[in-house]
Image (cartoon, rainbow, N blue to C red; front, side, top):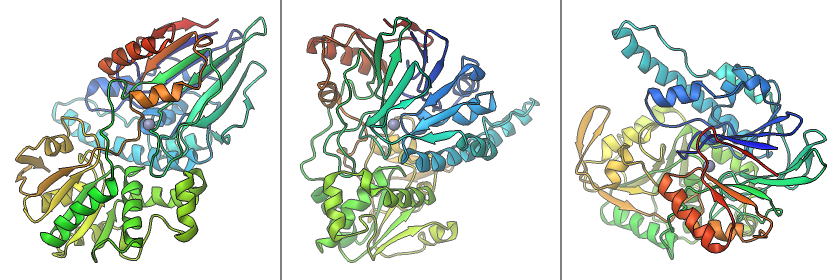
Length: 468
Ligand SMILES: [Zn+2]
């Protein structure tokens, strides 16, 4: 039995790990896209590093593009098998892959303009919407806790990872030539405990080998005693005292719905001022609709909440804006309001025009609710730059910039250790750390060794390990 690490080794993106059984059956865990710009990323995505026709099955941990985003290319390059995920992952993956195809198309048009000027041949997009259509036909859904046999050597089940809607930990039973069983668990991405919407990461079956994410292997989340109160303070300060607009850049999947849910609670308590709230992102609207259909996947507190309010993502002054024309109209409005828009890192999507129109007015506030890479527009705003570039023009940052850092879709290192504590340290032979920057992995490795785990490995890209 072998495992080969094909992605998310040196970086947090491009998740891909290959299991090969003694009879040569190949199972790919995730097929994520490397994210970032530049030729190197493009090349990493175009060249998978294996022949997709040799893969027998794919098991997908969750819908995020860095885990699912290269599935259409896998099929385009010859994969004919099935892709397994949880039932609530499927609709999310559908939305995200079509959006990804759109991004690929726009990116390639931009790249080809530059290539044309240099008299170079145009490139084709990584994949198109038609490739996504074909890809979706390969997906089969398996509910949590349901054992599924891929053949007589391999079975698996999903347990809840508490990271995003549908996210799963993949627990594999792999039969050796001598009929002994190897239990291998792939954590995918692990969520934090006590999330507003999601269930806690679940205990998983005892494993011999664990492929574990380590995004926050060296970090602890800042405690936020009351995110609801903090948000309300910022709303009152901006929309009541300053009579301005509160602009909240937020990821379409997860963060937007968390913010909307807090606002819904404030509305029900009659604490929300009498202002309009706009969710201005077609993708956020689509994902919110999916979440409404899957409320049973959420935690007990939310289940209790919906007994008295059947729609936790909607109230009478909340407007989901789908059409572009309505999005542009918001620029003309002088009324105090809240605008929640994507993308979270502020580099793409409608948030850019809201920032361009509102960032130089001191009456307004930009509320940053998530991590932004330092080289993104969000990174510039978050770090307190006084001038930022949007659509090629420079804007003074006169609006207040506030940060709430308590939202996160990933467990910090204490939570990861808590998540692993359901395991028998004497049984766990190796923990492989993936999906983290180098310092996160090395720090987390030390912490796990100190916890008493015998062998913690940071695999390199392409490295292969034999499992006994
Ligand atoms: Zn993820």
